[in-house]
Length: 236
Image (cartoon, one colour):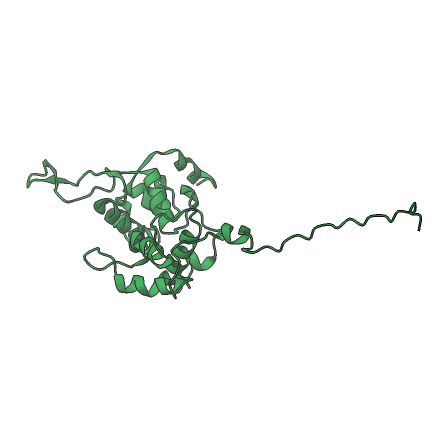
């Protein structure tokens, strides 16, 4: 395989689940078929996990896709149509922009889809062996809230952090079995990210505002006092 063979897959506006899973694991889909993956000796490392994640995301609606089910056959091996509730990994196409956004929200690094996070701290990269989801959630919540230029929620820093964590709960394992947010876990992480635990003013200054805000009572500039030259024409 040519060194840059994977680069050509960037031209695709949609990919099958099989193709996307292969590219996520860093393999050229042209070198395999989905049938090959049924032989465990041929399955690339990480392919099973990537395939499962994509299937779940497609089924839940997290990924924009055109779903095609598996074809069923009767006892005479005659096709009888799609099997309800199934997903065909070769026939179901995922929208690539949706896939890129899906990977970005999970801080998952893959250069093929332009989501390489090499510039981010290692501890925020899920590929790091020391990656801690709760730590990453606290840091990313703090970064997201402090980078906002306006207070979209009209609330305290804690409320804004809580809101961000709920919206991104699935990416950091902060959901229950029924899919709802784990409020207890969110409260724990919010305490770490909240820089104003004592409460108070609702306004959240951005980092840029903190650096550029002038002092409340700047010193009054001294007025220049002019000294008059004494006259020398007085008679005394």
